[in-house]
Length: 271
Image (cartoon, rainbow, N blue to C red; front, side, top):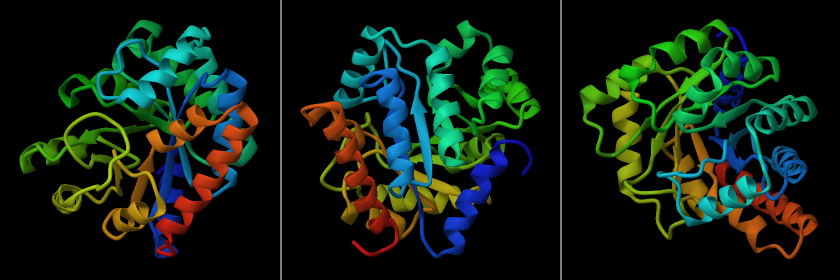
């Protein structure tokens, strides 16, 4: 696959060739500061994450739980702008050579301008976008510009998605498919549940794209469980919580490094 999304596809294929799932980390831009968020993205990539999703903080993050909402609020009160999100992508990618995605709701891109956003994201080395609230039926304009700039479009499927709906969603996506392990908002949970394995099985029946599972994974044991049936393990709230709980930024970076290393062992089945 050409363009920036090609690096994402190569990275996921490389993990599969090693007989393991990829580790995908989520961190909001601008949290705890713009520079701190860039440092955190570099830290997790240097400590075992294969891919980073950079969150574009939003004032009404309907799919995000309290941990990520808190971080978004800190970033927004700090004045984070889309240009800071693009800078985070650019610097994290330049420092590590790894694929960096942006996870965002549709409204900020729509207001910023689709052509402007896709051009700037591609120029920064971004691999694509995860768009959890953009219906496939309304995604034509986005996909046209994303494809022009070599960006991937990652859609989210859920346990409630019927098989025919899964086929519609996966046919429109590129890079990978984001499988939400359960209904509800983001956050860490005691168990990831059997729904996720069934959703991965049903999604794979409709596409050759890798299927990565998110929502709820917080430790190496859970990462190993999900890695047993998914192509990638997505972890967000656990990284954000590690930074929120730290007494200062340096301690927060140490905490996310340790968590990334732990989770990297988990996706390799060594937990």
